[in-house]
Image (cartoon, rainbow, N blue to C red; front, top):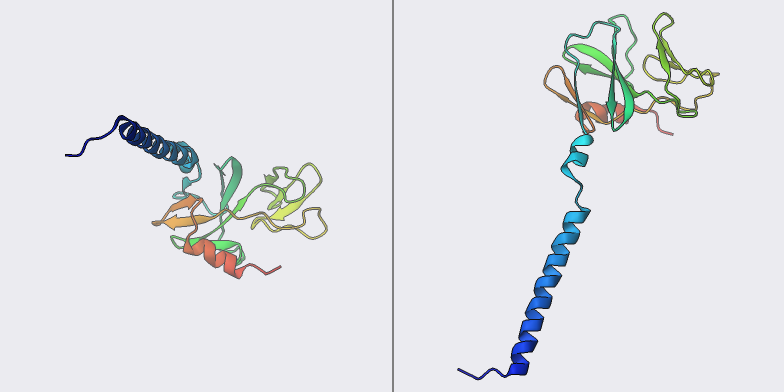
Length: 171
């Protein structure tokens, strides 16, 4: 066995400690960059629409934004760009934030539209801005996926959401 000089041993020991330190630093940086599990789970909201009556609106939140889900009446007009089918019924969904100045419109059931109290913006039940009112465009639609016969998962892009995006008019 060859003799290891003191200077060579100190060089190898220093190199080993530096290598271990570099690996530990990389592991710590990666863990810092990864989102916390609570943040990842906050990106999804599950909504069960079972038991909703025709014409009923259910409010929920997704990523801190108010979202409405409306079960369409059988007599309501269906728009491919704004409505989707779930369990044999049609639903409309949108982020209930006025596209004019970011207010939260109220649903006026007797008139059948959303009304923004700040500047008089109006949206249909499908979330489309009414002509002659301040909002420049319809409500945004959150990404969603249909799970089973009565469950929506907001924050996940499913085939129904993609079909609505494909049917939307191109700007």
